[in-house]
Image 1 (tube, rainbow, N blue to C red):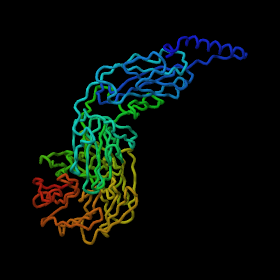
Image 2 (image 1 turned 180 degrees about the horizontal axis):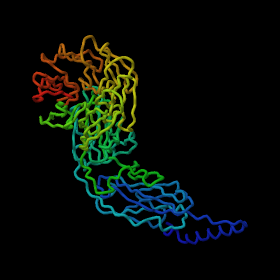
Image 3 (image 1 turned 135 degrees about the vertical axis):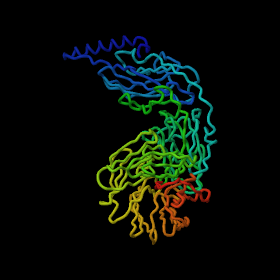
Image 4 (image 1 turned 90 degrees about the vertical axis):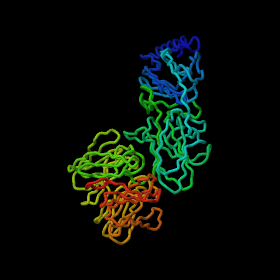
Length: 594
């Protein structure tokens, strides 16, 4: 860049070379002059390509040292609507580099936060070594032709754009969609330190005050852009907490967010949703350290192709308890039956039926292998292969689960990532095996001596992760290993002959409640996870089969439910209304597989 520096610099450079050559010649030693470094701006781009007024503008660039000689430290500056003519002129953003080794390319990024540029057309100029700190062999290649960018006015801000006007969540099961394309970032939006980020773009706010202690899952699954979630307590300007989630890291919702949090009764929680940003500054000017390759630091390709809509934002909140069978993602159980190798389910919201031919095999209950919050029809066939139809792609996916004779452990999520982990129990060695959905590795857990039955989809400690568990019918003792403390806990469930009821959370606190049902007395008994007394419910006089893990009214609490074989109907006691409801499942002979 010395072509625009102090006059006579070219003469100074030439003089340095002549003096160096004379000094070397004077030593009587054959030597070759060391070439100076040559820093060149070899690539630059900005995104979004077509930014709105509420978008952070990021500029990526590559600096290549074309010489074999390493450079010293230097500055790179970004200018808006201006081309500097002297050294060290202030720009809108800058990076200080420690230097670039010879024949090496380093990548940098910088930019401006939303609102820094007015609406309309602008041009971006980038200059390498803007302070004239490095003497180079070529001072012309430190810049490129200015790049044009047009800022378009964003749409109207949504009603919950500001912290002081949140959307109030009143129910423990919540699912809401909105157009957040016009949302803005307030000057006092908190930084998301636990996500390793400063304040996100396009923040919107929700508020939730639980009426009881509970463990919940929040996610943005279904949103069509890169999101972040944070949960805060306190008041504006003095918020605390900030538990945060950036990416869920799964194919169906990789750039969406999922967060598990424990909430206290009566405490008001402020839920912030924002768009991921690569802003790295408190002042509105961004500057990132150098990277050692051109790809580093470029998390998202958003904005590099056709403009994305970035207008569909979802927030889903539900207890972090056992999964339910939900084919339409309305957070309400759908009744399902297996008849002649076909699964049929009744959508609770519409009362319409859906179905899928499953073929021979054993149905796998309460499965969501693609993490989209919609149940995937699944089975295990005679070859020990798991098959499921992804509700996200619509395609069938198969996986061999290993040799041996074993039974599936349905609805398991040992990682707490919202994605079902294939799991099975080998009674010969009393071992539970599961494959983590994130890394694909299999893990084995010895469950202890004795003869017992594995318990599916249980989270007794409320941390959002499945706890390995089994029930001994000889001693009526339930055993589970907490995924938090990894210690085994045993509980005697009382005398009598009964069937253990898995995956139930009757008080809606996000923790599994031990429960059992006696077909002799038709009575359901469960023990609240808060340590309260056992609660008994008589389910009626008919020939009954208990239906576990259902929440037909969508209040986040398990509804006591039974299948009445005489009338082919499910009867359940809605925990929200307290009244009994009947679902007729149709004529014929079939098995309820909720």
